[in-house]
Length: 348
Image (cartoon, rainbow, N blue to C red; front, side, top):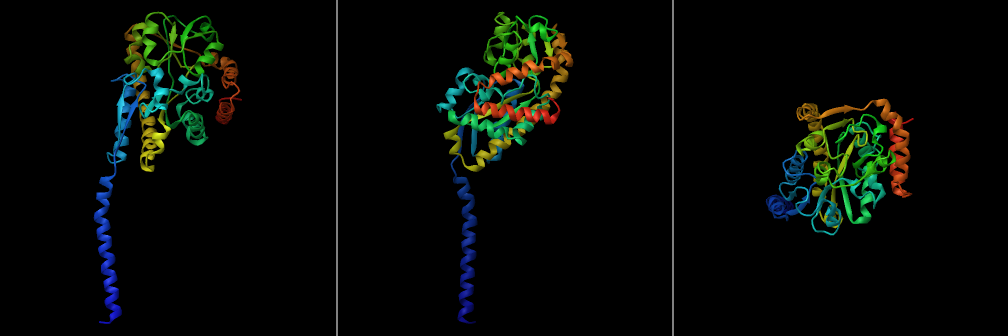
């Protein structure tokens, strides 16, 4: 055996030994990686259908990260009152929230258009496509960035019906009524003569019960039934022209989000998009069955005519533009949405 052959064999033996050591070390390195624990406050009460999907979200994030990213979930108001969640996450009191952007549209005009478009997108797939295929996700992140927050992804679902203590059978009947609406719906409904009172989701039941408002939106048909709205508002108006599609949002403290490894950031986005589709499908199934439950509680289901809704759209579009308040990013978002609606044939 030559000296060169011995040398080659020695080198090969050394390389194999090194690979073996690396292979043995890899699991130890992965297991030694620090886990991350966050707190998240959701929009919904415990035990409700949408809150159960938030439970799925945090479980999926944990699964995708091998249990190394744990999010402790809290129902609406469990950490701070819902109206304080934005500032609490911004200040680092906890790391993440599920929110409805429209709550803060008075401060940040862009948020009016990343939560719902009254008289706008008719199908949730259309609205979700705007986020993922037309640059909406990036623009939503631009809107949140100055506040020190990071927009992770939306949960997009269909209409939110209108619950009323008095019969409303056409658009003209809105004038002079008191209503709970938030975000862009506040501006649009105000244009139709509604005296708008913006309230957190958790206060809708009591506001209807006490007569603070004549009508209100809140959530999807099933979530609203679970919240007891059939007891305090006997007229259910569909389709929800004021909120034909809805986007709630997963939002994180930006500094906390920036510290996450890329794998954890990706897990948040993947889990969010999965939950969006899963919740939407569940709502479709549940809504078909829950109408009968409302009727069994003595509620009347009022269905607006498509022609009446279409005739009111021009006034709604004027309110859209006014809601940008001259803000450049809000205007850019609205222009993008209008262009897509024209492509879809929703607008001429």
